Image 1 (cartoon, one colour):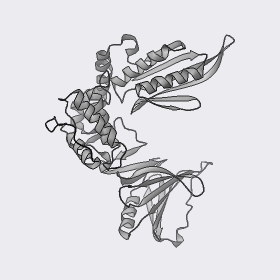
Image 2: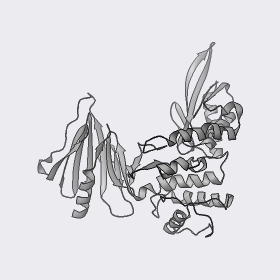
Image 3: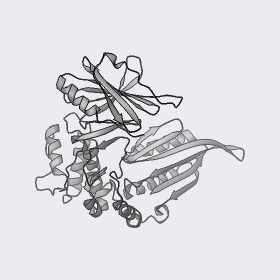
Image 4: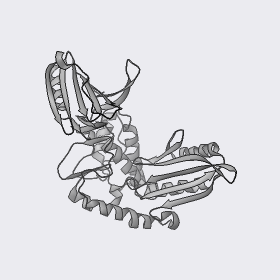
Length: 382
């Protein structure tokens, strides 16, 4: 489901400041670029608004246009975007036009939006054979479990997905930020982001959202086992009573408790989900990608990608002649090679015009062998 908008204004900058102020008032994230405003009412979706100057009847005006795909987040988000456009329409704009694939902009019946658009969309998804549903494959892939579907709010068997209700599937299923919203918002973070470590910055918001959900509706089932685990890890006092109902499901939250496949360009590589990504500045001033487990003294994985501008196939760059235990790794649509010397493993993968370099710094021979075993499982996604 999509909702798209078009409008004009003579004064772009004051309007953008006003829109940004409305978003801050509503608690929405915003990111301003030179030609685009990104608005994030919740995870899984953004309203992107771009602009250009245009002369109309000898008058210089700004044309603004944007849109939001609300399918993954749910009917609550769709309603929220429509109401944000209502607020924008009250500002100094003209010719506000909205194209709503669900018809909600015209009828404003939330029950109809939920039943006729989002429930029907979910019904169509149940019969699909894909392993991932409402999941951004560019972020990471959770470990494969046969006959299950990975979603942003949890893992389900195919049979369970046929029965799961919209209130459990969508992040924002209701007309406002009610108990269901806060529970599902916490489930999203528990499943996709949480590392279950004391220093994880997402811990506080998860606990806060679950407690808000309980206070708003004490009868709503919650992932209490995960809540108590996170309270203990974070040193947070229990705020939810022991007799509160448990959300009982086959799989407990936490994709990052297992192995995950990360992606850079056309390469996927396997790491423990506890590893966190950060951008580091290298000695030559360029930026690099670093993965490591910050809770322990783990190996450090530095990964870089380079593309040949000519479009020709890339070639190995490292000198492997002085390395030990050099071995080839076969890839679909490519090849890779790795070896080690001192405290570092070097692996290079050639995939079409792309050269991908993985340097792993380890501390013990055991870490070296574990890292080499992971490197043997790199994949091409070209």
